[in-house]
Amino acid sequence: MNKHRYFVLHKPRNMVSQFISADAVPLLGAIDFPFPEGTHAIGRLDKDSEGLLLLTTNKKVTRLLFEGPVPHRRDYLVMVKNRISAERLRLLQEGVSFIAADGLPHHTGPVSVRLVEDPLAEFGIADQRPAHIPSSWLLISLCEGKYHQVRKMVSTVHHRCRRLIRVAIEDILLGDMKPGTVIELSEETFFRLLHIDYDAGAN
Image 1: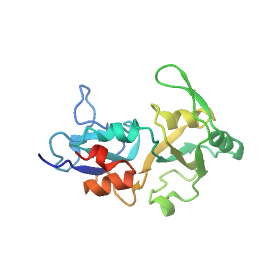
Image 2: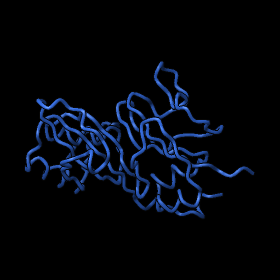
Image 3: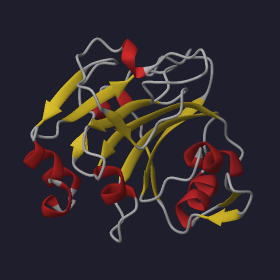
Image 4: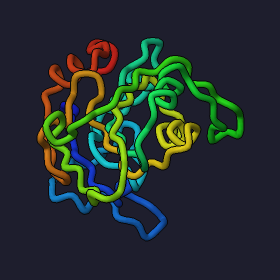
């Protein structure tokens, strides 16, 4: 039996988190890396989002990471239009409500949100915004992942999401990876950094 394999990708913007689609969209197969047959993304980033995407040939990992009894942290670096006030930052931190994809209201509860003054120094992410256009950078940490949740959260406090970059899942960090680059992790390292039960998913 072949061992499963585990990958970390910096997904570029304007690419869907799939290898196959009926739509004419940029796919993961465009990445210059010889992924083995059966590789799939663990969770997704929407087409307009970028950053850390995990891939594996192990079908158990998605369930263990996102559907298990223990929540797992995901960190998002978010650029929003206009300067965010202390009051609106507090509202995000205390929890906001929005309509989820199933049409039902969802409340986030308390969330870790902080301002990032220098995304280049802290995360290696260049600002790219014109100097005359005001914006703010936030680091939002979640243990849940409703469809477009981060975008909906900042929208509830009247800010538009201009850029969304996933920079960490538990202890797997985007670091200085460039868009389109891939690194492979050993099975043991992958499970350890994600804080999931190795014995439950390794076989």
